[in-house]
Length: 280
Image (cartoon, rainbow, N blue to C red; front, side, top):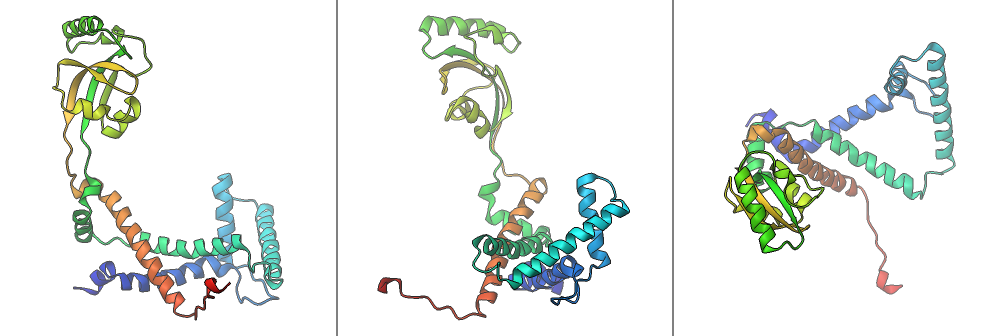
């Protein structure tokens, strides 16, 4: 296996790669205040460009000279107050700051994982190991006539006879009772159909033949005559169809892995002492 493939597939090398990326990221983002001591604040050209870029994202234009100076002065003000707050220990024992710093550190792992594309061979293996989660659900298209909550047998048979005469032509919208439910549904999966008609409606339709008006079929609203116009069975998609989704899921798994390895590395630097809660 080549060195490149090892970097792509081995978690420990992911961690080493992430460490390098983290160092580079801190260098790029934190490089605006150089020679970090308590009395010297140097605003670099890179920092000024970042301030101007942030301005452009909001206002969709370049800042004027005066606005750029204002951005710099505001950043200097922020940096001065930030350092003074640290000197006073205002960051200590603050749960909001603690959580924010935790999230920022974990975000670096997220960013590092997003930069790794393992290639089709690794993604195909991940796809095969987790294939149940990528099954494409079956879909059904149909027309429906709402009969109400408790139609009589006479009403059902009369409406069914008229609908049968219509066949596959339009015009069924005027049959049955008035409803806000759509008279036609294009190809839709169980989740979409059940969300509109109530749980179990898709299952009730799945065994019905294509073309004929059948029913009554019970929904969460009452009874319906239904004509299935098309069916698509469930299937397993090809890798190429859902590669982006599989890549995101693979990266999400690596994030958890990298975060855990990163934490264990950090934790090894500390001696953890936990008081006996039962003695209190």
